[in-house]
Length: 291
Image (cartoon, rainbow, N blue to C red; front, side, top):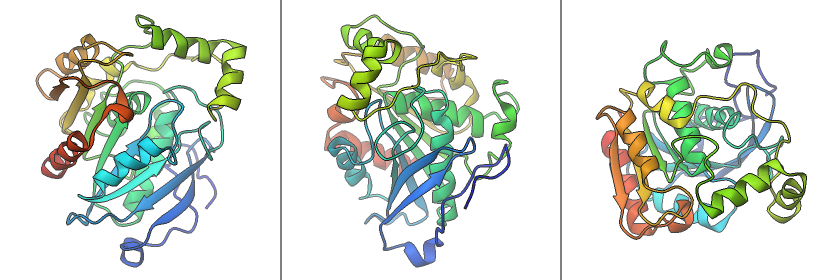
């Protein structure tokens, strides 16, 4: 199905309803509202929550076929169905990465696909860059609708099918342009320098847009207050080498008591650091809080 008019979340190509796919894995290309083709996969899972689906949003330079993404998805399938996808500019998806800005449309397309398949409860689970995207997505497509930011409002008018019922943000930044750690200084070199984007394209399978943000999107900490009443879980490791613990604490404080914060002892950064026990706890939390 070709992309719809501005403001609508475009559906997948030839996607059957859940009744015919509940025991079938699927691979589809989705089309975002701004016309980018997104590589996505559906696993029906083995858990008892048939109406629930997790949408897994990977970190920067990841994609749906990376082993750490597949491992995280595999744990979550014990509770419910899982949709994984590659953000724009990553893996088999089209376009170029905007490192957390336009990626909100990619997530919206994946959520809409899960609802098209018949799932009535959706939980978005994002890691690192994906963690910032799930926060922005929840503020734009759900939560306190009408109080969301003014950025490209017409593109989010079709938010009903793209809304989420609970949000899990793992290892996310609270604010943009953070360079306080060596890993984040390397990320900024990768994104802002021509030679860095060359390494990203040919070394990391990540095609990065050369343009600066214009306008700059609202930061994760600015979005968090608009997510309520949608349940929100913030997860962060106390050994995260990219974003220190002031980031999750800022996010939790911005929620004014609405968010639940898990500071995980000994945990590093994102999917690679999230062990099976933590992922299982996240899955249990989601089942209990989504709808």
